[in-house]
Amino acid sequence: MLTASDEDELCHLSDEHLARRADSDLGAFSELYSRYLCRVYGFIRSQTPDAASAEDLTAQTFFRALSGARSFSGEGSYRAWLFRIAHNTLASWRVKHSREPFAVGELPDRTDPSPSPASVVLAGEERHVLWRLVASLAPAQREVLALRYLEDLSTAEIAQATCRSRGAVRILLHRAHNALRGALEVKGLS
Image (tube, rainbow, N blue to C red; front, side, top):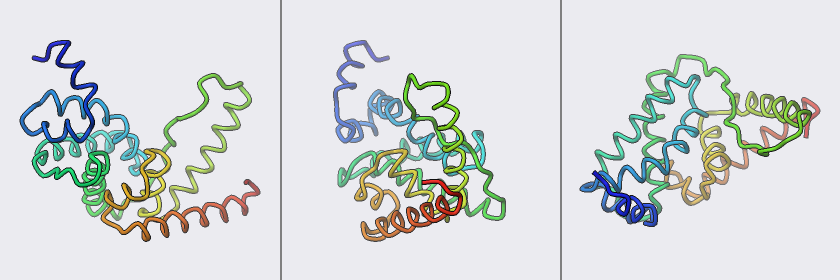
């Protein structure tokens, strides 16, 4: 069992340092789990039709991260390594569920903590329209958009997480932006 001083020490360590210890130190893995649970769930939820699937896939992602903790080489960021596992978990899930339609979910909230009631309604409607448009994109475009804008990964980290070149990631983002821009113009939105 971790003492308060152990927990305090772990909180101040970098992801990469914790990852190197995670194979033999469950406290280190627990700290990484705490840091990334919501982010990994949010990313996976943005790619799946329901919360139950997202919860299962998130659990699988962290199980694989713990099982493969020795394989983290320290090249690149731990965050990109973990999202690579999430990407692979999603890819396997998509193969099994490829014939099922993708139901539009809700974009995770990241809004002003004290907005006016009118801005809440407008932002909600705009978010719903935008999310419907994002859901209509190809899975690869949806994924890079979620990693870039929901998870704030850099192009290099997205490339590492998805096993694509930086150029391929930039092209996917560019094409997704163009598709969204065109669809928004058709709807009369900016």
